[in-house]
Length: 263
Image 1 (spheres, rainbow, N blue to C red):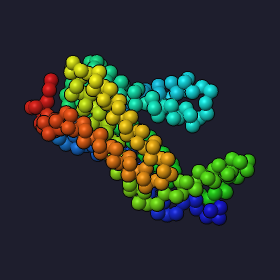
Image 2: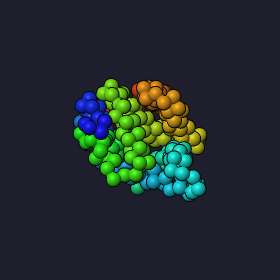
Image 3: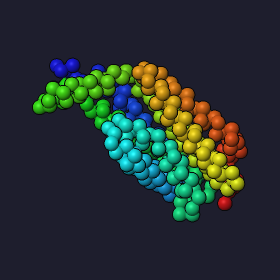
Image 4: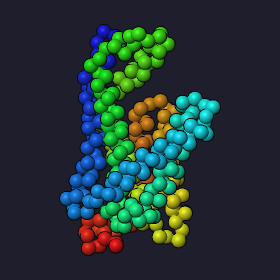
């Protein structure tokens, strides 16, 4: 690998497709709503801000809880806490007037903003990885200690072992996770005035945790294909469960037709 490009042409193309998909997904979702005349900018912005704040709070809490642990331990703790922070943040955003989330379509817009910022972060990360493709291994390891060079080589080998079909599966997985965030936003919104709200908030946290935990358990197989398929499957299960709880057929009508929107 030291004499030529780090990635094959198809691997580089795959990272480009994945990055472009991540970036365009929330934009496309927004344009679909806008075409239907139900898009709102403010809930999208609120969703993005809440995602940023809750993930940062999760990371900060993990650093405090795992102060004596290594980086991998702190990352694991953060992954456990983020489900709670994100869903509580989703609830607070919809509970108080400042977010102005009063209709089904604004709840969808919140989900687009929440999931959209995550998509953009991942998308630009994929494009950054793609930029490694034409460089040689020597350009990464020059001047590094043998131990550091070995770590870099191992990491690049992992990134290079990512065929085009895996990037296409990654796109499907991204779509599934995007749908999960919109589904959970609708779940919280439709149950916001329910007398058993705490139960539904805990349900949202549990469903979010189910997606994260499934991916974590699948990673132990050390087979990327298994991890992606589990990610897609767990996301689709959560979406199906939420759709059943909220009665998605009636909700779609409320989103598509302004005259049915709640005030």
